[in-house]
Amino acid sequence: MNYRNNSIEWTRRQVLRTSLMAAGAAALPQSRLWAGDATPSKRIATAKSIIQIWMWGGPPHLDTFDPKPEAGAAYCGPLSNPISTNVDGIRICELLPQLATQADKYTLIRSMTHGNNGHETAAYITQTGRQPGNLVYPTLGAIISRCRGYDSGYTSDVPPYIVLTEPQGRFSEAGFLGPKYKPFATGGNPALPIFAVEGIAIEGVTPERMVSRRELLHGIDLLGKSLPEESAFRKMDQGEEKAYQLTLGDTGKLFDLNTEDNALRDRYGRNTFGQSCLMARRLVEKGVPYITINYKGWDTHKQNFEAMRRKLPEFDSGLATLIQDLQEHGLLGSTIIWCGGEFGRTPKVLMESPWNGGRGHWGSCFSTLVAGGGFKGGMVVGESDPKGEKVQSRPVLPQDLHGSICELMGLDPDSPLPNTQGIDAKIMPLDAADWGIKTPGRLHEIM
Image (cartoon, rainbow, N blue to C red; front, side):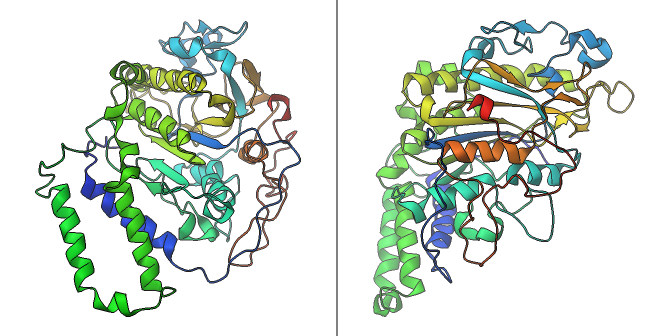
């Protein structure tokens, strides 16, 4: 897989190009509309938004949330001094000091498992809560987009499912739900200036010139003017209007981080991940139901510990500040944070050539962090064995986590998943697939 750093500036033209594609797809008429919404959960909904921090490539659980110094240097490497948190008995990696002060606000799941070690398949399993088969299921983000988006009273010009900044992998996020429920990927880099000063050329085109071009296009569009309101072309016009609002209108100002306090931006970290976390908080304030931060760079086959010394400090600043900032804005109680990747990394360090201190893929046991939205803080769910190789107690499957998140969002996981294909599927039933692993099911102990 290619994990190049994204250093493209967010310009009006780039956002416009992506916006037109997404808004146009959303505006196309559906073959059949589903009447009603998914059955509400019996649990009182506490969450309104979800921020998923997708650590693409698979973060090493022993070097983040499940340190094992007692296993020896062959397993913990040079990160052999985990630090205590503000919750008695919970230790995390020494490179996460800010998160150590926030442990009372999050829960660590140290017994996630699915047993798959392939990036694409493991990502599909973790994102959808389903085993691969003939039917392509939607990701949790697409499910929330269907059940808490435009079909269920959402009226904002900002799409209900947003990815900062690139799609998460080589699979269809919306599955059988269709392109209407795919995420809007913003592109670019929020750590760089999003817009130039009004009147200054951007890639040779000023905002005023973009407006005049649009007016010219509409002036010569005689065919479009002659078509009835319900035609597909007029629907595309509606999509175009939404796209322009995302770039030249008031909605576009949402993506301009220059309006935020410089000291706060510094706390988040002046890097792509830190500024994406700040953007996620702004999107939550706007009422967006599902936001994914696609955080690359965790596929550390080689020189794992050098990578951790680079990545963990920016991860620590971004996530700890996001938790604190949401709380200060009164949003943590209604916002779920779900942080993890498709699997963990091999507990035993691969010292031999060509890995030279790397870690491979490990789907047997890995860690996930959850916070806010009704999840309790200051807890640990499950336990790995003394070397972090297998689940020792309370295994948690992706479908267990997804179902719990759905319940906190007010959705019954066992109710039918509305779709236009007539497919008989439930949102996230416990019997969705034969995993060969018996689990207690939903995470009710931390809800």
